[in-house]
Length: 163
Image (cartoon, rainbow, N blue to C red; front, side, top):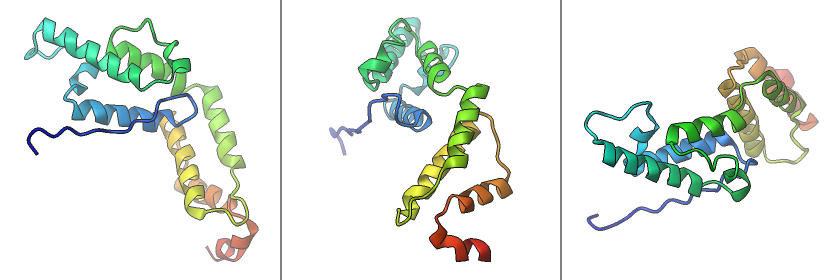
């Protein structure tokens, strides 16, 4: 594998895709590039100040390159990876009561369309549950199961009653 370079397709974060999934993808990319230490609070003692500054600039650049223009303008003033990351988290991974309420309403109103794809529906359901967990809102296993069953169309009535 000497001389080969890996290429990764990263979707631009446009505010419409799941921030937590995008964020973990960027973190994985930084690990692959050997730049993940730049997200730490302090410079590792094994790295000199000049190299640390270059690493931080590369990480800020990598993150910004994965942002859509309409999102990028929100973070143009951030010059360190940590500050940039925190600003994005504050905007798009808010743990506010309003955000939790909106996520719960979306989860409670989620309904699978008749004839819809069950796999896609379960993925959407799990995505909403994951976003709630990231916002420090927990669902009991029983509530989780009941919400999923209640979101299924009438054609699943026999299965729901059996369970």
